[in-house]
Image 1 (cartoon, rainbow, N blue to C red):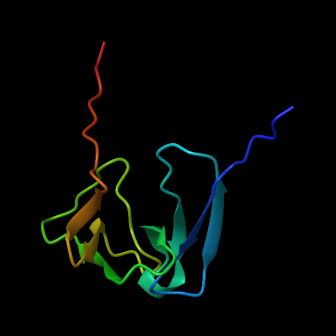
Image 2 (cartoon, helix red, strand yellow):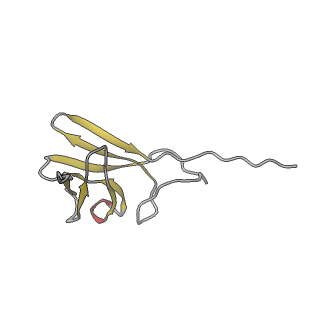
Image 3 (spheres, rainbow, N blue to C red):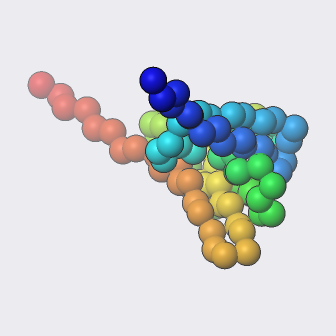
Amino acid sequence: MIPLLRAQTRWECPNCPATHVTAGTGAQLPFHECPGLRGILAPYVEAGTRCKVEARDREDYAAGELGLRTDQDGRPVMSVVTTRDDGQDCAVFPAAASAQQEG
């Protein structure tokens, strides 16, 4: 019998003390509600990665959209941007339109 090794990836947040560990291979990018980014959903980065993770507030008018993501103070958040030396990643939180049919 050959034991199967499951690779572990260690994750951390540059804005708070939170850490996470995932096992196995495959595309996994864990998120957490980050107290350092006003409680919004933010990605972890691989441990030891030099980067900046920042929230981008929504700058347009927010009416009554469904799925609107807000921070702990109720301000709408548009996205979370991770900036590394070799580029950027962006997690976008779009609102959704809704309609009602009168019958």
